[in-house]
Image 1 (tube, one colour):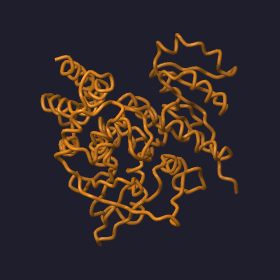
Image 2 (cartoon, helix red, strand yellow; image 1 turned 90 degrees about the vertical axis):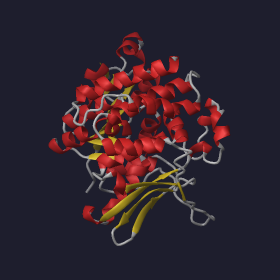
Image 3 (cartoon, one colour; image 1 turned 135 degrees about the horizontal axis):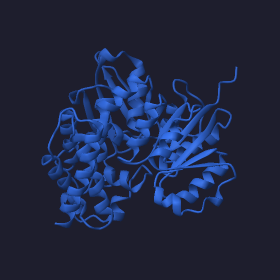
Image 4 (cartoon, helix red, strand yellow; image 1 turned 120 degrees about the horizontal axis):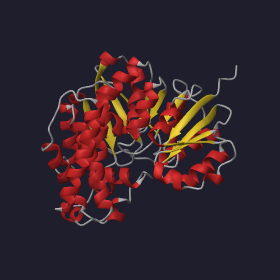
Length: 387
């Protein structure tokens, strides 16, 4: 029997995850149908994607850009939606089976929240959603009976490995980190790195924000927070280890000392496809490991002194409340300042520390309060940058 076609919406279709998702779709056109796409500023590319995949609806998250854009490049009959209301309508279409949440940063929370509110399963590539509002998001998903399927390679690896045992048999999970481009550099060398050096990741091809986060290891800090809520584990059961080859994407240790790891080349198409096809596995376009070639897998402990961002992640995972929203917003703004040449690479984490330490912590905030603190943290970083 031919499996039913899965109808999907891709939020952030012109970014790295969005493009990789469309490659997965293109490899199995009889099994997927894209019914909606969204983009922020790359509207010409959005039109090209909509035409190629015969998508009936698109959304532009920036209303001003949408109003100024010439939409005549779209095929006739394609619906154009605008702003947060447009995203809400797109993900709530009755025919949608799955929403791929691939908008980078805090901006992705709106679409993810709307999709879960509509009872849609979400393939989550936006870790910031759970960093900002983990308890609220997980409660909403449970209430609406919607699944959250991780797309981050590390969390997908844990998700897959957890199928080898029961939740009460898990001793710990181990997230792997490549160490980024500065793993072997001295503190003196790191102090003077350029933007281009920070964007030269040794194993992954990602967008600029995520690449800088990998260089500071803030990405791993945020992943610790994400894992804390996604898998309902205390921080004490979440470890991080440096693995420069990016072949072992993460591991789960069970209480009998067995360790189950997920291995694959550093190719985001595999975790994307697993989220799209779960609980099944299909043939797909992801790269395969070649075991006929010599391979070395190296693991080493994290140097917390070299990567102080990681300690911030554990602090936030322990504290919960408003701390995740503040750390995430501060980091986004600080990375933006670095990429604009306004602050140095070594200023990013201290700026985040300063803002986190000086915010008015609340243990059980509302979603509105988290949004307010997101804006506050960004203003504080702007003041820090301009000081």
